[in-house]
Image (tube, rainbow, N blue to C red; front, side, top):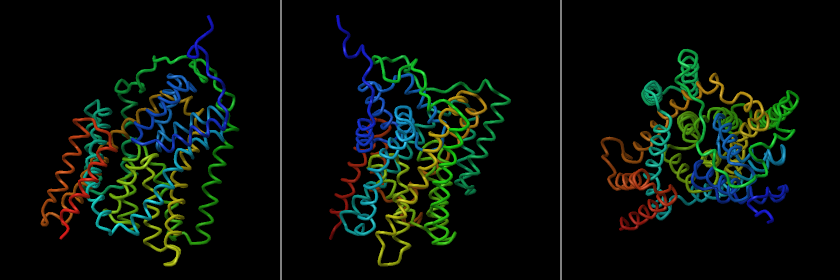
Length: 448
């Protein structure tokens, strides 16, 4: 009897075939990191069998150890395994580019026409839903990671540090990492090798199967590591030097590049973890946009495909447009250029981490000296995200301050959104759509 199609390994994947898939993924990758990873699992493991369940989860474990958007890095990693460096670059870039172009368009519509009643009404409804989504993120990450009392202590300490003492986010990350390293040395039994369940599932032979040896380009060598790191440094330093030469170190474009480079290196725990740092810099320090605009940008990020950290494109666009960095006659061009620059400097480290450090991270994966600090950092991230929910809630529910009273309509939308997310397990997109409709109806009802 001839073997069934599920009993035979799939044919090798051509580069063009892979490009079509990565573009499709960039267009349909809604639902945040969990939804994006689920789509990749369904398509690459179950349906196409380009990679086995165990190898897929192994790659995901590597990406979870790195700063940056884990879903985009996972796509980069699998593209790299399949088609070397250019395969990884193509996979990671196509995961981001559709979202970038869509966000630039939506950012322009927002800043140019956001004063219109119906658009303002949509955002009025979306903002309370965003508060509920951020609170759900803190709850979800907290229940998954805070397994020991000392981790609860780290989370509470980070919440107090950023909420009451306005401690910079990098210092919180550093302190948590040091606490984790000390705990790993003194109490190693507190830590267990992390991972994702379900590695026993099998969907038939895969192109990259459980026992397929790593391709030659995925084996560690100091020469490959040096080349990749050098390429990454050049791709960062040359644009930065050009910006400094043209606009000066304190110019708006230069400072955006420098700030978002730092942000990219601190995104342990995903996009929600880095948002407080982005707020501290973009809103409080540089004044590129207001707190309300930051909320609106997060709402747009939730409703578009691609990684949520793409909200940085909105921040860059609004900052470049509002500050008229290319003069009053080129507002859109200034916004689009700023959005492109912050996207470049935000995502460049992710590519370098995968292409340069993939084999090296594989070699050190599971060692307690690496997992212990990251466990503590993840706990600190929970506190930081909880503070973000409180901060957004304050601006949405008390828009005029304590004396202005509660906006009860916004509070009702936030409560319904939280109920749908936490109790009914409704996805973020339907919740946002329902909240936007409620905001639109309220704005029309309030018209004279």
